Amino acid sequence: MAKKILGISAFYHDSAAALAVDGRVVFGVHEERLTRVKQDASFPVNAVRACLERGGRLLPGGQPLNLSDLDAIVFYEKPLLKFERLLETHYLFAPKGLRQFLSAMPVWIKEKMLLKKVMLDKLRELGPLDTSKVKLLFPEHHLSHAASAFYPSPFDEAAILTVDGVGEWATGVIGHGRGKDIEILKEQDFPHSIGLLYSAFTYYTGFKVNSGEYKLMGLAPYGAPGSARVKEMTDKIRSALVDIKPDGSIRLNQDYFDYAAGLRMVNESKWTELFGLPPRGAEAELTQDYCDMALAIQDVTEEIILKLAREAKRLTGSKNLCLAGGVALNCVANGKILRENIFDGVWIQPAAGDAGGALGAALAAQHVYFGEPRAASTGKDRMAGSFLGPEYSEAEALLMAEGYGAPYERVPEEKLYDTVAGLIAGGAVVGWHQGREEWGPRALGNRSILGDPRNPEMQKKLNLKIKYRESFRPFAPSVLAEDAGTYFEKGYASPYMLLIDYVTAERRKPLPAGYHAMPLKEKLYHLRSDIPAITHLDYSARVQTVHADTNPRYHRLISAFKKLTGYGVIVNTSFNVRGEPIICTPDDAYRCFMGTEMDYLVVGNLLFDKKVQPAGRLGKQEYAPD
Image (cartoon, rainbow, N blue to C red; front, side, top):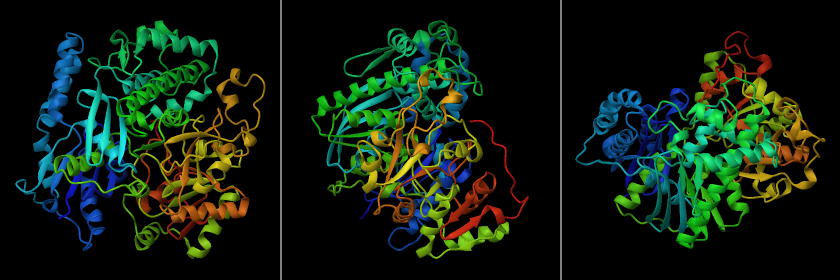
């Protein structure tokens, strides 16, 4: 009988739940999408309920599941092992960090040490649970990451690399996946962590740890490559902060860091002395120094990741690599691995961070604990395009429209794609709500805001009037998979927007003399290619390739845009505003649409025009910084 397994991640950030049946991922959703609390860390009661109710309806019989229908419920890490690390760390660093230790203890005693009881209490709010029949399992954190990377991958055999801040003790592992088995070969332990090193610079440059790392990555190209200042910062990172070994393992100089036993990421006075630069305030001006710092740490991170990838190759001899962990969301480093040709095939879990641990925990239970065989590779991954979340019917969309008194036009599907393509080509910004929600941090064409990449004003409009976010932030292209090589140098398949590629040389426009010495504000909106809205300063783009077999509606829309304009690529950014999670329901979509300067909203086949919506029902909102 097919095993039904529920995976859960919670209590740190990005809580989530995922349902796997017989090793196939059926449903998965982030708690934040349902509660509307960004990076919700609470126990994912709503996500679990959705897995049981909505996920159950996707199974033969089409009925919601009860908890007792499950074979196992799996938490993505071992809380007691994590507690051991906390105790040992504070003992080693004592008396430093006593305040943090005392403040953390009540939470650990109440929640973490008694996690099994907390989980059972929360789960029983959803219905009866017979623990004599349903196993409650706790794989290690990095095994959950490794399972999330290998088991859904298109490979029967692969090297596995997981890198993040910290799990229980491990901050990264190299493993080897073969069939149903995963072998851990090498481990980097706390307090030495690539993820925490990168997060320290995230903090120092004024962004929020555990959510602002991608901003730091996006800021890096504004640093001056090859400049004396970047070289000086890079040298100081290598000499004072981190000792990088040939195999990619690292040692962090704890004199400069406070995360192990203190209340801050870094020793600010020592960093200020080292770099001659104070920590940047969250809303302070981004000067060239902070851009150069971002470039320096990005360069160092890429150096470490490449060494780790080569070590994984040496240890396993594999031609394939699977990646997970929060650092695997660094798409610039991922692109470097591909460009270096270390492996023939590279696959990255779309929800590479802690949310993805829920999915990995469920799959680890299937194949490691229960020992069930893994289906042979078909050459394609097992993520169904990462469209694993809730889907809403037209009836639900119509109820939303009725509730807001919102006028709409129902466009027949045979006309929908040409109609919306025409709006985008005419300069409109369109909210696009379709099908099942994406699993992972990237909007992949079902909960997306779309625009014309040829429009030189589009980046500014999206950042300042739609997303209400920092003006330096780049936007991603969604390109027809079959056309990727037309626009980008390598033309990699990148369905989950986790790889950087570069706009082809013939599409680039030269930068003016002295460009890198200009203030950031003057650099932002120079035309850099014939698709300026998705071309970053260094001609890079975080590419999403759109495949007809996994997202036919989105593929048809971009194809219609190509038929109209000659360009098989559009701007895609997540359907949310700064400080909020990606939208989930039709109601979320309409509220976000009305709270911004978006021009049109499409929910299924329903088209909403901002110009005719009722005034005053949902006015423009003010959004707090992250």
